[in-house]
Length: 291
Picture 1 (cartoon, helix red, strand yellow):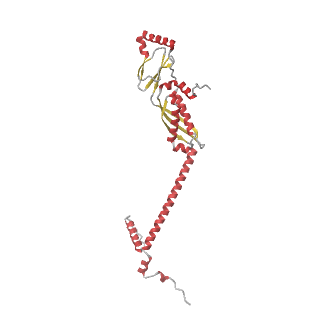
Picture 2 (tube, rainbow, N blue to C red):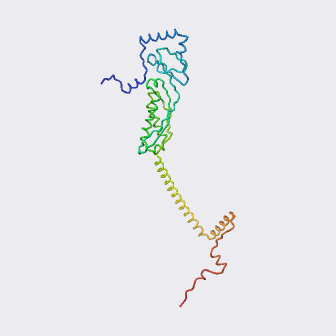
Picture 3 (cartoon, rainbow, N blue to C red):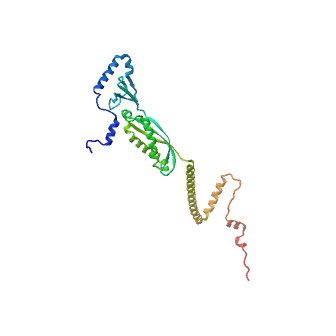
């Protein structure tokens, strides 16, 4: 193998740059002077055709006899374009919004979904965008669709729904690396909507409702257990002090009276009734006959 041969990656990058450092040559200079002479001869008219205005958000790439004139594009202002030998191409550097139509994707857990998104990108190298790809916007649009399908195909449905930001960041990284040689810089990727089948939506809703009901039952059981513990503690306190039970009766009566009720139920202990009537429960018990 020849040691002077360059690596394939380096050769590809050199081919993609699209800038030739070779000189025009004898024929090129002859054509250049003829074009310049033609512009001078037709000066009053040709000046309006040869002067081009570049706006602030634009860059211009000038091909002279098929070769790009400089490593960098022409900046805003006036640019002189010679007739017959120069080709003038404008490139817009403003951010472009690329809407990705809904893509039908089969996730890793075998669920069919439709996902759409949006990609924000801009051209940071006008020379690379003109020389390395025929239609930079169409190429970026198709690459965004393919990358979206490839990335989401490796994720489960729960990962897509819960981790949209992580998935969008992965897509942005892959797009930025792939379009670097095209002079594209991806600013942001957003996943707009994830559509799932209706039957799957119903099953997910039923599962979520079952989980909520189970959680509610657990909370209700925990509340009953705490209430029973509190009642047990209260009964132990009342058992130690019988007067406390009477005070609780009075407190209950006060609470009932504040509600403006016409009927008040006043519970009385049985020993009070026995004292008022002079009759004891034991007196009503039958005495067994003695032989």
